[in-house]
Image 1 (tube, rainbow, N blue to C red):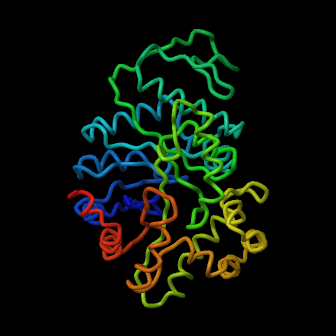
Image 2: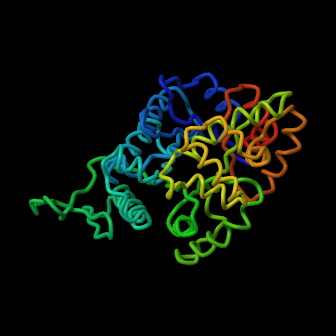
Image 3: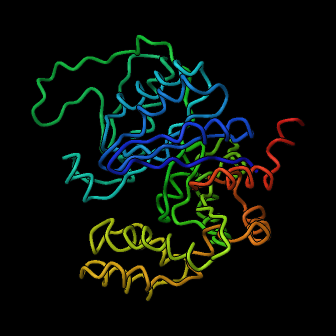
Length: 349
């Protein structure tokens, strides 16, 4: 199984763990992934890493759709790919939530399903350079002809000759997973844990059926993600992760529209998700973290002594994903996961 290294987005200060990234590259990791929320962006660090690395794929997991027009996203990703030598960039896209879309980016939430579909279509037209780009979409059109337009917009073809960049989507709801199967090259399943593929696979199958052209579920890269902590104190490791998960489940989204909470519900924790959100929004953040069941965290993570991680890794290996992104602050965890995934043996083969 291919491995990725998650960098996430910055806190108060931007600090890319370059030595850990270079270690992952030496160990044969497939990709390093950046992210963004409402601080550091996800694309600029990849340009820096393009100059510091040689082979590892440079991906976003994810860029927020509302942060850029599709043309700007296509230009930015193609530029980084050119700087990196070509064939190294993966564009992961997600919609974020309405609080950030409208509150931070000043964009309408609109209809995310059609917005994503238009966005991806326009990006691929730009990279293809088959003709000056035009697109009549339900949410996004080129040239723009809406409110405030002068009506003189001109279809254009990219000056830069671009190679197509794989597009992966971060989705979780039934409609959006079906869309992923239909239009995407890869998928970041939201809130995934081993055992969830039985829920998701029928949705992916419907998506690839809509795509036609012989596309199969097996043609889609599926990237799980696991927080990985080597420790003798399993409970302390679980508790450390709960703090961040409580933030997302409880507060990363409106009370009535929180996709992280929805993902917890899909995994069978509906009552617990409601309680976490209730406590968090009431200002009881420690209590919200404590209300998350230990098993919920344990299912989606790899925590404990080396022997325990090795045993629990088997579930990830057999769960239907094609890659696993490791989220860790430990170099020894990066090395352990390379050993478990046998990435060096795969490269040698």
